[in-house]
Image 1 (cartoon, rainbow, N blue to C red):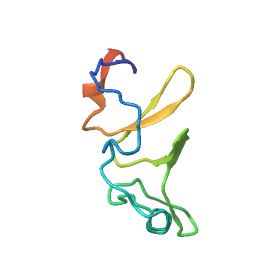
Image 2 (image 1 turned 135 degrees about the vertical axis):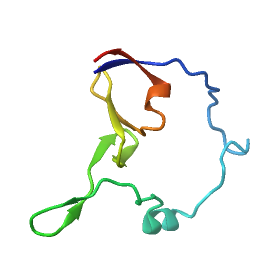
Image 3 (image 1 turned 30 degrees about the horizontal axis):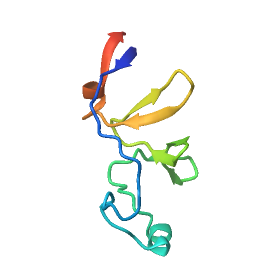
Image 4 (image 1 turned 180 degrees about the vertical axis):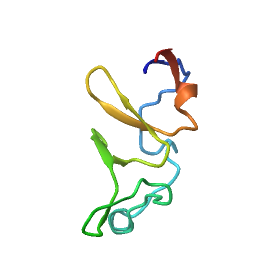
Length: 97
């Protein structure tokens, strides 16, 4: 299906340290070693050799793993995004199936 992104209003603020724009800070070593990601709903594939793998997409921010029921959005320039089924059609309007 082809869709068009539904307009969403947003406040855009360039990040500046000291303006309390962030929600908190985490030690770099904790971010690296703890891997702050929720894995409960990730798609899991068991290969013939018994290994379990999870699919992901790569983009300018790194990797995004794909969860059960997620949609992939592929922009005209080839950029990919993941969007949950709970938000996809509040952000994208179907224009052709």
